[in-house]
Length: 364
Image 1 (cartoon, helix red, strand yellow):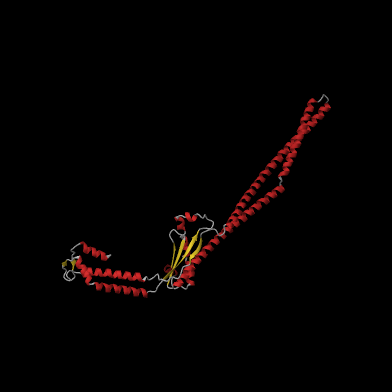
Image 2: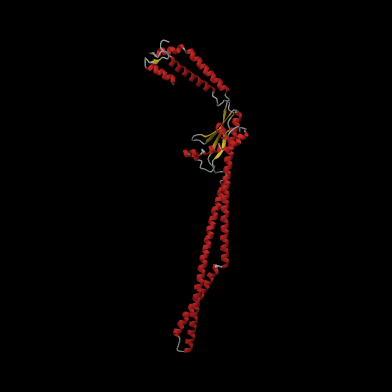
């Protein structure tokens, strides 16, 4: 960039004032003169660039090489989800999968890997930042684990280990969550069953101690008896009205009428008492029946929830699987020898042109 800038400055003006270091006189030069000056010192430029390239090559060869191995995981949707989800997955869903980056790069998992491959030679966080990189590829369900070490075989083995352990941790976590859900559901079901048994036992005890059917039968019997008494009372009252002048007959019929009226009153009171008792028993019994019904509904719902959890076991949460354990890298990821040499030559060339531009004077 500095080379192009210097050339542009030379080409833009035919005459450029330059301050000479020796006598501070202002002289002028043209682009042709500058290019001639550069050609005359081409050997100098080649030597400097070659030296920079050789030094960069030597430095790159002396620096310990590092190799990066990569393992890939596929995040499958839950087994019980709609298969069309794979097509209609939104960016929000893909973004939510980034949570698995934290799972694969957890400190506890990396510590286990570091101990397994004997990498604990410093602070864990520093080593982790240097060695491990976990990335969920943009708008995909692929999780990539990259491990950088000096030993390529060890890097591949560690990347595969981290990928497999991530799958195992996710599987164990899902199984633990399902077990916890099933345990809670079974507890709720057992509690609902206990409430149902208590409600049924209370209803049976009430039915045995205070039967409703006996009161209903008694009510029916009292009603029939009152019906017969009232019918006899009506007949007796009619007979009394049609009775002759004989006092004996009138007294006898009147006595029977009074007896029937007394019986009717007694039956009315007994019917009222029995009706009140029956209403109380029916009200309490209705409450017990409603409690039994509610307990039965709650138990049926809890038992159905348990069956649903058992049927959906292993079908919740995303499933991870290793789709590429990686291969032993053949090329080093650091240092990049070719790139370093090219950058060194480019920097040396720019420095040469800048130096020649600053030291050039017309007529040299």
